[in-house]
Structure formats: C-alpha cells, structure tokens
Length: 435
Image (cartoon, rainbow, N blue to C red; front, side, top):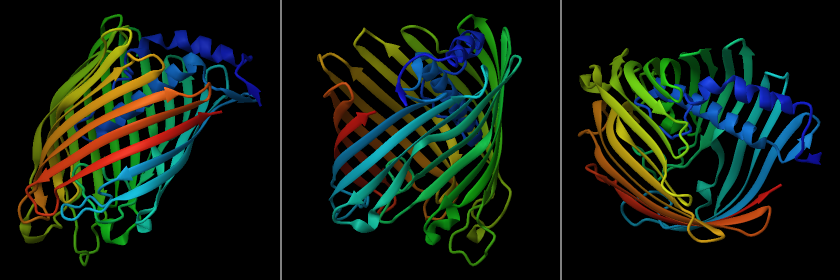
C-alpha cells in the first residue's frame, strides 16, 4: 500500500470529468428535503453520485493497494447528554463513549466504469444506561457500480443505514430502543442529450426494526422517479419531476395492537437548479403530492381517505466571502407517518460556516419544524408538534492527520400530546485520525 500518487487508472478521472460535464450541474451538492419518499430516493441518489464525482475529481484515495484507492478514518467521541431517553418528566442523563471508523474505497473496473464502497460505524456505549448501547451505521453507507453506455450513465447501488438514534426522527420520541435498518437497492440512470438531461430511478426499500413491539413500522416500498431537465443556460436547468411509490406495512396479522394502512403515493412538480456557480448553488422545486391508502386495517374506521397537498423545497448554498458560507434549506412536505398515515410539515434550516479564526473552524446551525398528523392516527387526538434545534461546533487541526471538534446542540420538542414533549442538551468532544 503506497501513499497518494498517479497510476494508469487516473485517466478514468480525467476522461469522465470532462465527458460527463453536462450532467454535473444537474446533480447539485446542495442538501434538499423531498416532499415524499419517491422524490427523496431520486434526489438522494443523485446527490451521492455528484458527491462521489467531486471526490474523484479532487483525488480520491490517500491509500493505494494496486488499483484500489482507500480513505480511512478512525474517531473517538465523548458525549454528555442530559436526556438520553427523550423524556418529558424527570429526564435522565448519561455519558456516552463512541469509538468509530469510516472507509471509502474505489476500484476503476475499466477506464469508464467504477466500483465504490463507502461506510462508517460507531458503537455508542452508555456508562449508566447500558440497555441503550447500540451500533450506528452511517446513513450514506453504500455499494455502487457506475456503468457508462454511450451518453447513458447507469448507477447500480445498495444504500444502507442502521441506528437507534431518535433525534433525526421528528415524529418519534423515546423511552425505548428503536433500532432500525433502512436498506435501498436499485438503479439510477442519467441520459445526457446535450440540451436535455433525463434521469430515472427505481429503488426497493426494506425498513425493519429490531424490537418486536415496534414491528408495526416494518415495511417494504417500491419507489419510482423520473426527471427531465432542460438547460436554459449552460449551468442552469428547468425541469419536470415525477414520483410514485407503493408502501407495504407489516399489517397482515389482525392481532397486532397497532397496524397502519398500506399507501400508494404519487407526485408531480417543477424544479429549477443552478448548482455550479462559483459562489452560489441553488435548487428549488414545488408540486402536488397525494397519498391513497390501499388497505383498511385501522380501528373504528379511522383513516382510509386520500391525503394530498402541495410540496415545496428550497436549498441555497452561498459563499458570502472567502471565509463565510451559509446553507439555507426550507419547505413544505407531506410524508408517511409513524403513528399516523401521513405527516404534513413546514420546516427550515440554516447552517453558517465561519472560518474567521486562523487555525480553527466554526459552524453554527438552527432549524425549526412544525407538523401535524393527518389521516388515521393512533392517538385520540392527532398530534401537532413544533421542533427546534440550535447548534455550534468548533474544530481544530492538531496535526497533518489528527483533528478535534467540540460541539454543543439543543433540541426541543413541543407536542399537544402528553408525554411527547422534551428538551435535550448534548455536548460532544470528537477526535478523528486520517490514515
């Protein structure tokens, strides 16, 4: 294994960097939240593909083994958390030790086709509440194989994620272990027709929990999406996006205490993208989305009606100065729920990077979401909640390969259902070593 350097395979980088330029602007690296599952699968796949393209162009691989290229990292974090079970009354605190690693590997099969693998994992060890210990697998973990056929790029992938973390589940709260595996396998296609770029995707999703009492959230889904983008300018596109999906819950056994209706959902909308600007990247989209229940398993005749509405999202990345950058995202969405058929929410998030102190990095963030359950709900009154987050993180390079970050975050959830409101403070110190 040798240090970073050139090889005969590097011509793959140079050739594809120029060859696929017309599609690069389409795959914005700007974070976006989709209105529903099918569009989210499509955008996630395209963002991962664009992120990989950028990493290859920048020189993927600090370590080499033949034609293989690797990036390896190890980390160790210590977290102080004042509400580890997300409780409204008498919250309990703990210290958490979190060793972890991440790996990215690339293998150029031919000059045009490439295989990649990316994952990372950490073990969360609670010093007092050991029943909460769990393994966390990074959400962007994936196996991927890119195949070029003329002007058509086919990306075959398997994306997977496992966690018990609840902070990223706004309509869920704790006092329990909610371990869950989310696995999506499918194909994404990008067809470059000069002024026109057509993309399409199919994903089969398996969502499975590890605790039997929460297996009512187990489901499979078939997700389809298509987008047609017209280059109104060399780096600006306007287009049409559509999606549809079939969600099949684990609801066949009538003795289960909680069952959710299966859903068929579809959407259509317009989008505008300007992702390749030097100082600004932009994506915005809006359209109509509908959820139609295809079963009738909820009690007392609740649910079973169509839920529809509008969705909209805006993602903006702006480099104000050489040292200050912000990322703004927000929108309105309708999505499948946890205790209800659907959730309708309005959300916004702002992150600012302040590289104003020599030798240090500083980032601040804030977000807000207001949401309500719609359709059938297992609460007597459909839940309405507001959710706020605030965060700050300071980073410092301690050497060529070693860095450290100290971060603080505050999370508050305010619900109209008793026992589902909480606040949480986290202080996390992380050290990371790059091989």
